[in-house]
Length: 376
Image (cartoon, rainbow, N blue to C red):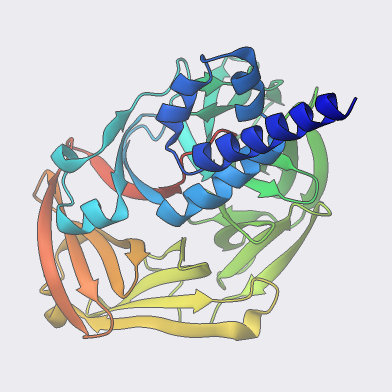
């Protein structure tokens, strides 16, 4: 009996050591090791180990650069960079890998804990149907399609739909949030799909409608957020949906942010919700909201002149991509060129560190998405 207990202890200690070593390895290596034995396979996909590996992988977050075609937003290509490599050489040729998403999904609208949320839609004369899935590019594992979110047509009925993707830690649930604008009723309804659900849940109906500026919702601290304004007034607001309790609220944006600029956008930088805009094409400004629950926490993260950035006022779609330490990556393109310019701006020294041409397909724009390889 004592010998049996001693053997179990040795085996347990050995498993702990194996898990400790594996938890520091990249996903690609771990996926090879799962073939060693059924025991190793069970250890690798143990939920506690998956969480431990994700926690350690998060220290080496990466960035995805997406090319979205202007004339058809449901087409994209994506390349994966580590942040240090992107800073040193922000070109497609320096990418760690090109991401290929499973068919028929054509639109990536979110990344969380190593999972992508992908979208596909079908339209007929009677309705349009929207399906999503969760895809892990590191493990190449794709979930089954979600149930269909069906929007029926009628006389004068027209819809706009925008998606967001996030994670609720306490419930260990991944949620897709769809904001559906019905132009005929001037109402916005919110639908939620949680991984494993058998249907979409209709959680909220708002009136007047909320018109989004940035199509994608941005996830931060249990909330998915869209920048836009009410259909009855032009004042900018943030529609914030809480994944924890399925409630929503509106966050005010500082009044000096222009409502008529086509280059106003939102994103997440250094753990803050950020709004970027230009002032009469002379100054580029980024505001940061540190606490999503407190709209009084806005601060000015960046305010830099076009002269400092060496940007002509005749550009197309200036926006921020990501931050790494004191370095902010911006992207813009000239109206007459088929390539983007990536600017690496040093906030601490208030100067451009370097610029780089980023070759892209014509009629497309560069976006970014944070990514952490995981076993989720």
